[in-house]
Length: 273
Image 1 (cartoon, rainbow, N blue to C red):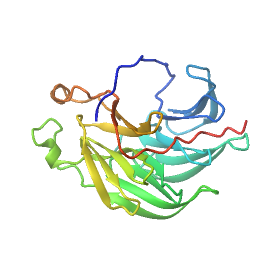
Image 2: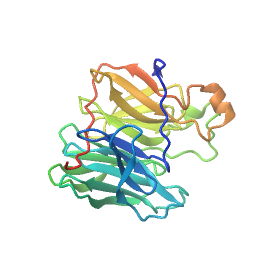
Image 3: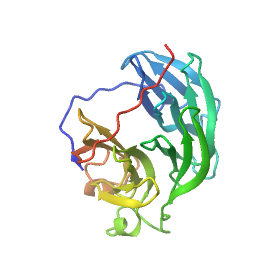
């Protein structure tokens, strides 16, 4: 993965941290902020609160999320102290009737990440990053129901005393599962935070590939471009050591490269209007 071409940078100030967003059918965006789910009719537009949430805003905020193929918005939270299985939950917001219906779908995690669906919509993934686990369920698309939970992949834990800027950091630790993308062959691609790589898995959990990237903390892969054959990758910079940043100057940038297998089109949020 290499840095993409320079483009115009646009900034949209938010009242709190945006965890995830998705396009809305008919125009605009749905955005998960710290305290709830919002809609904007266009980029930079007024934020309309669709669903307020009552979790402890001092410790919990929304993080990773996506829309499913039926137009429901799925968003997970992160418990920022990361000292226990509290606060990280996965919600489904369904507005197809015009009125939001919010359902708690999964919990008992620390940091929600990696939500995605298989090519045939019969399987769903969700990761708990600090616990190094990607979960899987059978998925019933029409009803939005998750059944038959299992561990899709358990990644090796961080070794005691490991530091990211050590000379052998990448050989000692492979990272933990962050954001994900699924391609048109049904492969699940997962960014490995502090692992400096993207790992790829077949739907049955078999590892099928690994790509090293020029940063320690990739966060979210995404397919785009007119033919969906450009892989974009967001990366983290905040809180990383000066030594690490000197060795990986592309940290914090969006990287991109062309790939052979196209990704899947993004799903849009259905607001019922």
